[in-house]
Length: 171
Image 1 (tube, rainbow, N blue to C red):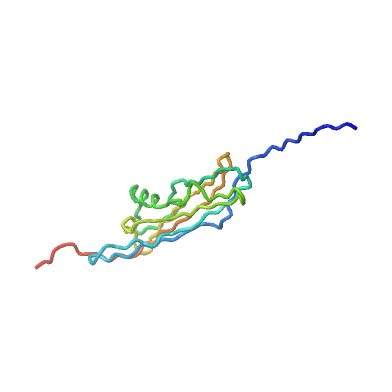
Image 2 (cartoon, rainbow, N blue to C red):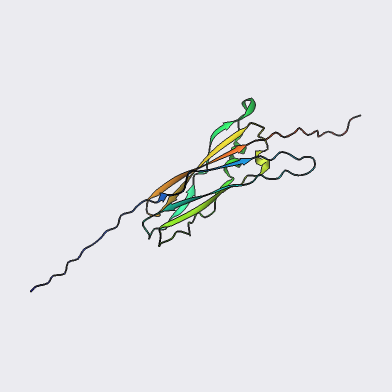
């Protein structure tokens, strides 16, 4: 009898991560002014979680977002957002775990939370019926060229702030 070794080489390919969480959105409503009795309180944060899976267990994934865009706005009296207002609104979004250090090399799953935390002073210009919608594209990268994206849509609603008389008493 004769024997011969047979060598089989199995080469892996890069599989892209897959987003497993539902559509992501949040709403923030401006708090009404309490002046002159005290400072405005900041509105509650909008939060959520983007989950993903990646069958390539040796990947080293990370997450990032695109900085956001104003995707819609409804503003009274033909008002347009200023550049500074747009910047303040866009800067209020963050990812809680962009390093995705919770990625399991056993199950191939991971996640990152996101938070939209805007100061009331940055949205005080909005009136009742005004709204601004922002869209952030969050990208999960597997570190080997594979990516998956998830949109996060934030809606900011204004409230009516009473006028405040700033002059001294007149006689």
